[in-house]
Length: 225
Image (tube, rainbow, N blue to C red):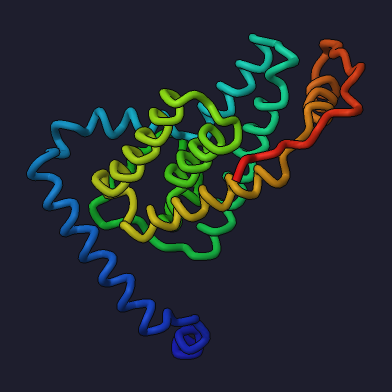
């Protein structure tokens, strides 16, 4: 029976095994090199802050809190679409991690904030995909001012590097997260909910009445190429 189960267990292709081995070596080399300039013991608190800053739960709470506290119909469209984007990110990352099931690096410490079972897996990086998606949302979709856009880009870059230095992810995990985040941003720009739809959703889910008059002619989002 044991031999049969071993035969039935899918094996990783040899070429992929070699790629993953190279990825592990490059990740360790990068961490060892960077530790000389940015000692992990010294900057651990900074890395943890970056980790908290891109956790899914605070982002959901912040978006919902801003929606109800500000209660501005002019902001509903952006807020609802950001919540939509965050939901898509969680679904995509969960499905991909469950399918790939790559373990985290050996040096990872099991001290992440509010984890679930799927968080035991490493590919792709959910923090990186979320950071890149939010940055895409900020820079390309809402087209925020230069200062905010630049800050978002630096934030996403810092999170990407910190995930490797904390040994949460290998380099390929982070690159996968970048790709997923960009793809999600592109998808959201094409699935963008109109102002009328956003206001209707808020009105449907809340006890507060929202004025829907004049929203039937709302124009779709147009993003400059």
